Image (cartoon, rainbow, N blue to C red; front, side, top):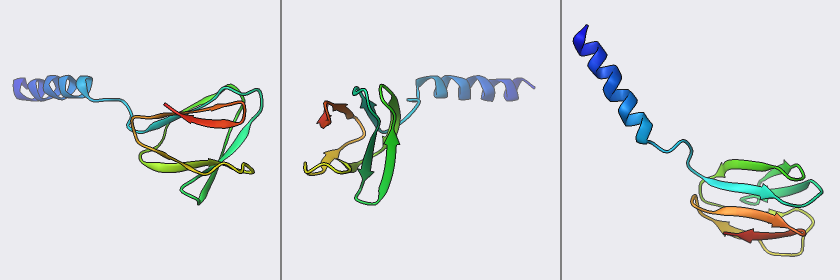
Length: 89
């Protein structure tokens, strides 16, 4: 019983230091929803004024119907949509 309790406590301590999610965040600051293209394959709709945490690890992101090129994103980045443009922070 004592060993089982020790394992549970140790597991809890280890998980308390682990990050909750890995990946870039996507934030839409515009008043309209946007569709983004991830890695030139997957379309994703993000509603106006919303945030999508950990939407990708490392990927490229492009606004559908935008002439702007795709931007490269790492897992520590936040991608902000502001006035129809992508900004990587």
